[in-house]
Image (cartoon, rainbow, N blue to C red; front, side, top):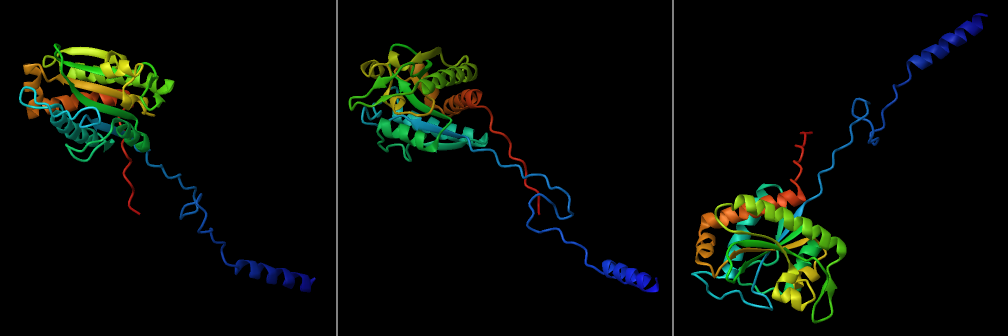
Length: 260
């Protein structure tokens, strides 16, 4: 009996002296204190907008002077201001060219947006006609280029329509009282669009939603005076940016990282 009691006491002593178990350091589900750690919140996916300042292209230089300016200059100036406005709202922006006079083919402009997986491609242009004011165009049917390329897909057509309506709404509100609102139109209503079965070249090659904004009619003196002025360019950029946000949605705010 004494031997049994002594054995029990020895075993109890050995257990009390054993080291405390360690929490595995590589366990991602536990924190430093052994409690379950909250999963890390991933950063939201980037939201890319592609801005395509029209001309020069294989179709035209856009350098013809009208009322003291030209389409290439206006498109470039507004593109830079639009880029600034969108980036301040958290969007990532890609341009289809790196300088005002850089010649880029229309299909290659679409490829820039496709590679970036842009949420929207916005093509900036100026019209020349007996009208005045702005209009937003989108492809409502497939077209075919001279080299046999066809497009865009039905999903791109549907999303482009929604985008055109949203961009036009932003412009109508932001430019009220300054420019005439000519509404939403289709690529088929343009000369090149009709020649290609209903879609512009930039639309045919686009794999993302695409709209073409005819910002003003440069042959109209009042329109030209508006867009030549810095104030008019900034107002135009802000109105288009508002329309883009209506379609794409605001970029989610990034949660601030905690200091480790």
